[in-house]
Image (cartoon, rainbow, N blue to C red; front, side):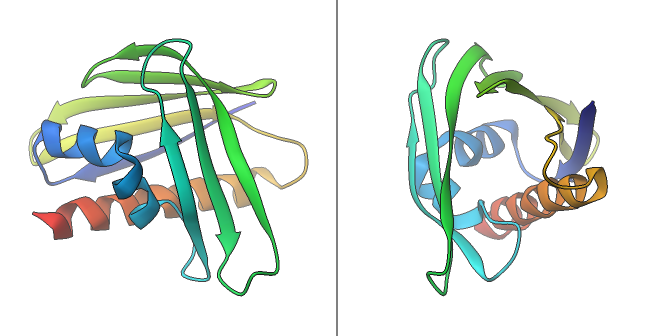
Length: 135
């Protein structure tokens, strides 16, 4: 099953793209809640290139690496990734008022669809706040 989350970022496309693809920026916004953070991020932004984001609870109780491969990059428009047997697509579309981001990903079996949707949406919402505050 595919799940889609969306946001509208009130910022220029270049700023949105940079924040999505720059490791130092990713570490600032990539968390679903305030008690988690991304402690390391690597990005090799090309088809066949790898990405890895180390996500950890701030209290040190748990963490995991969200890692995979970029399968297609269309600069300033689309990023496709594979991570294990799952895939995700991020689309960037200029709209009135900013850049619409649509992220569609394969659901996993461990968490409910609603938990997954709300977690990925929370990350996307943090991204939006980060980019808009940076301006």
